Length: 242
Image (cartoon, rainbow, N blue to C red):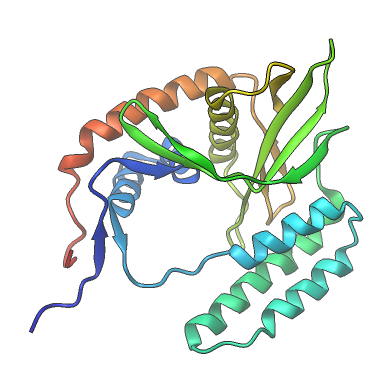
């Protein structure tokens, strides 16, 4: 009898912007774990935060900043119909995510004088042999000097009961800035690091790209080459059936 597959092999080096930020801030041992999980994707269903992210982005786009709206959305998600225990757990986890954000949503340290727009999924970009996917939850803009419009993007992060590491957030916001610059903008636009933001939904802290965002992204690009070179030699998890 054929063994049940546990993992799917990703043959070519690829990683999301989020995992790349985690990798940059991780210890050597944690980096190996991140690379293994990116190359060998678990087939078992993984809880996603799609409902929570949608609820929070809608809340931010609405700009009324009424936490009771988030509380109502959390209750709606929690009471969604489910067909399995897994779906029930997903509902609970997403509802907890929104509930937590409702408690910090009135005190967000957001950048000033900007406008929101719905997020976008960009084409994956190859950086030194590593394909990097990038799907910010929101796009930001604000007026600049000399008729320029400054643009940026925001990505949400959340881990129950845990504040996002500042180092991870600084790398992720630097990656947001670097990728947006790499993709290019319209002639009348300019990417602004101050509105390239990682928002920790647990604490409500908005981490803008730091002043050394360019040098951080240069380090990211060097790491991409290292990851690409190492990809073929990354071993599968113990007991994995590919």
